[in-house]
Length: 339
View 1 (cartoon, one colour):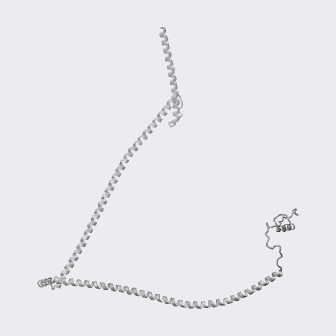
View 2 (cartoon, rainbow, N blue to C red):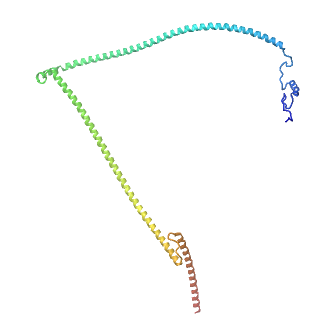
View 3 (cartoon, rainbow, N blue to C red):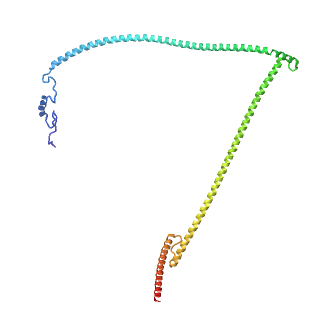
């Protein structure tokens, strides 16, 4: 279907429903004001022509080409210099590498030689210390041997009279063949005496150990017996306490049982008495027995009603009797007055 209204359009300053043809004038007017539109300098002067722009650009292009050729020549010359410098640097680097390898090998050799020399020095120092200790030990042993030699000489000098006595004993005695035989036998006796003393000490130590073991076993057995006696006494006390407590609870239970039995008897008697009273009251009133022995509440209600009824009848009889007695006394008084 056709449109009734034209499509909304926006002009250059933002108004709607304005055609561009009508907005051109407003655009030109808007360029004349300086509040909302910034004008560039010399906005109303004519610019350069296309020929002038071409000449300017051609000159700039030639200048740029010359500058480009100069830069290319400088770059080539600089690249050649760089190649020469790089080659020289590679040669220097190779020479320095060789020199570094030589110096490094020399340093390693020096370090190995130093390590070997230090190791040899330590070994020689250790060997020197060992030899020094050996020399000191030898000196000490020589001094001890000299001292021992002097002591031996003194001992030999002291025991020379005994040697004569020993020779005399060997000559006189038929047992010993020579002084050496006598000395050997004495040494054997002394060794036997030493062994006997050692065996004696060993046996005494074993006997002492056995005695201590027996004492320990006896004390442990005594402690065990004492502990068993204590446990037995404790069990006996516990048994007596339990027995006394059992007798006490037996008496309590028998008393409770008797009390329960008596209460049951009293209850049965009370029920029998209530039922008997109920039957007597029913028989007195010529009623049939409608409640059982266990219907206690109903029987008590019936007995209560009958008792209240009997109490009311008794009160009525007492009132009638009091009124009758009052009437008899008044008649006696009248008779007395008449006489």
